[in-house]
Length: 270
Image (cartoon, rainbow, N blue to C red; front, side, top):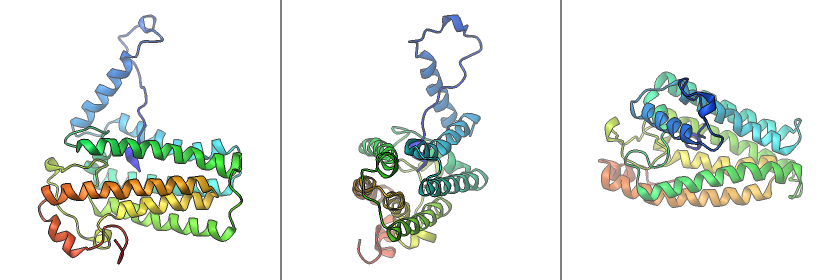
C-alpha cells in the first residue's frame, strides 16, 4: 500500500523573498522533488519522509469518512481503524527493524533499475486505488447507488480485511526486499525469501491486497467498489507474470523456489 505516497510541498528556501515568488511559479516544486530524490538516494530517512507518510496515513481514512458525509458511519470507521492499525504497525516495525526496506518503499515510479513496463503498471495501480477509495463512500453512503448489503456479507468483508491484515503485515516482516518497484535490488544484496508467508504462496502481498480490495467494499456496502476491486485484482495478476519473468531471469535461486512453493497466489489453484 505505501507505494501510493503523495508529493507535498514544503518550506521554500528562507533566502527566497516572498515578493519574488509568483503564483504561477512552480520552480519551488521542482526543488522539493529534487531534494526529496536526493535524500532517498543517500539512503537516509529524513523528516520529509515521515511528513509524507503521516499525511498519507491520515488522508486515506479521512477521505472515506469525509466523502461519505456521515461522521458516524460505523463501517467507514471500521475501515479507517483497520487502515491506521496496519499502516502504523508496519511503519513502526520497519523504522525499528528494517529501515532499508522503509526507504525502498518511498521510491517513486522510474527510480533506479525498475523495469520500464512496470512504471505503467504502477501508475495504473495508483489511479485505480484513488478511484476505488473515492467511489466506495459515494456509492455506499452519500448517494446510496448500491442496494443495501445484507449484514452477513458485510461480516464476510470484515473477515477478509482481517485476513488481508495478516498477509500484508507478514509480507513486510518476512521479506526485506518487498519493493513497490519490479526491480532487482543488487545494492541491497537481493536474494530469494522462502520462509514465513512466502512458504505459503509466492506472492502473499498480492493475496493480501486482493482480500483488501474485495473485502473493503463488501464491508462498506459498495457494489461499484467490488467491481473496481476485481479490476484491481486482475491488474495485480497481470503484473505477477512480468515480475516472475524478471525474477527467473535475474535472481539466482528463484527457479528452485518455484519448485518448492508451487502456487503464485491461490493454494492448490494457481
